[in-house]
Amino acid sequence: MDSFFEKLASSSFGSQSSDHLKLLSKRAAGLYTRGEVDSLNDAVRSVVDTEDLNQEQVRRVAEMANQATWDESFHRGGQTDTTFEPADADAVLGELEEKPQVVSDDQSSLDYYNDVPNQTQDVDWKEVFKADNDTPEYEALNPTGPEQAAVEKTASARDVARFGVDQVLPDLVTTGEELYQMVKQAHLRDGHGLVQISQAVGQAIEDPGFALAIMKQASDRLRSEGVVIDEKDELMKLAYPLVINTEHPLLQKAANLEKLAKAYYSADAAHEELRKEHRKVHTVLRDKLRGL
Image (tube, rainbow, N blue to C red; front, side, top):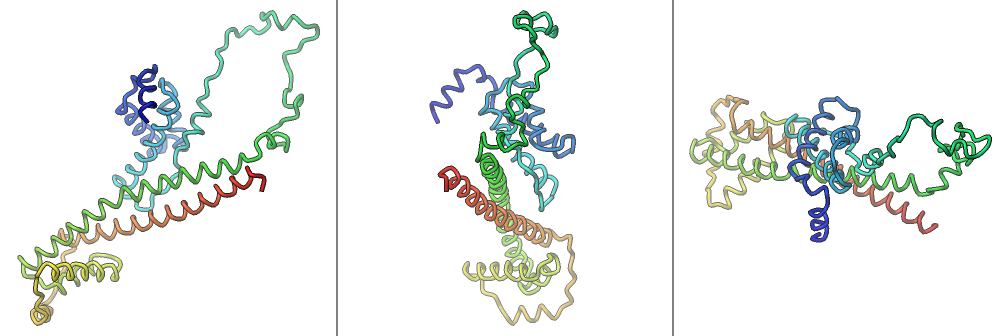
C-alpha cells in the first residue's frame, strides 16, 4: 500500500486530489440519475474523458460513482428498492484506450503507399485473417472470455449490494435506539401505557408482526433497566378511547424504522445471493482454466 502511494505521488497524476475524484464521481452519478446517459459506464467515461487520470484513479471514480448513485437514489430519493447496473471500471478503461494521433489526413501523400506495386489501401483484414468477432476462431482467442465477464459483473454487483448493507445498518441501529428512547419517555414521563403505545405503533406501520417485535424488545429492555410495569394500570388505561395521531414523532419514527428494516434485509438478501452467484461463476472460470 505504501509503495502504491509513493508511486502515485511521484507520477504526473499526483495533482488529482481525492476531493477532485469525488467531485467527478458525483458528477457521473448525477448524469445517470437524471437520465442524461444510458448507463453508469457512459457517465463515468463522460466525466473522466478529458481528465488526466491514471487507471487506479479511473477505478476509484467508478467505485465512488456506484456509491454516490446508491446514496442519491436510496438516501436522498427514498427509493428503497433501488437497483442499477454498477459502473465497470475495466469496461470504462477499455473504451478510454488512447488512440494514435492522425499525422496527416492525406493518405495518398504517404511514401509507403507507393513503395510496393499494386498496393491497395482498401483491405478487408477480417477477410484476410478470417477473424470476425462472430466466428469460432475469434472466440477461440479467449476461450474463457464469457466466464471472466460473468465473474467481473457479479463481483461488481456484489460489492454494490454490500455497500448498500453497510450504508443502511448504521441508520437502522440509530433509528431503533431513538425509537426506544421515545417509547421510554412516553411511558415514564407522559404516563402512556406500553400496551397503548403498542396499539398506536401497530397502526402506524404496515407489518403488525414487526410492531409486536419492536415493542416486546422495548418492554424487555425497560424491565432490564429496572422499570416496573404495572399490568393492572396497563389494563385500566386500555379502557380509555385511543386517538391515534399518525403525525406524532414517535409513530413517524416507528414507520421510518420499518422502512429501514425492510431496506436492510432486502439489501442483505441480495448481497447473499450475489455472493453465492459470484462464488459459482468463479468456480466455473477456475475449472475451465484448469481444463476440467
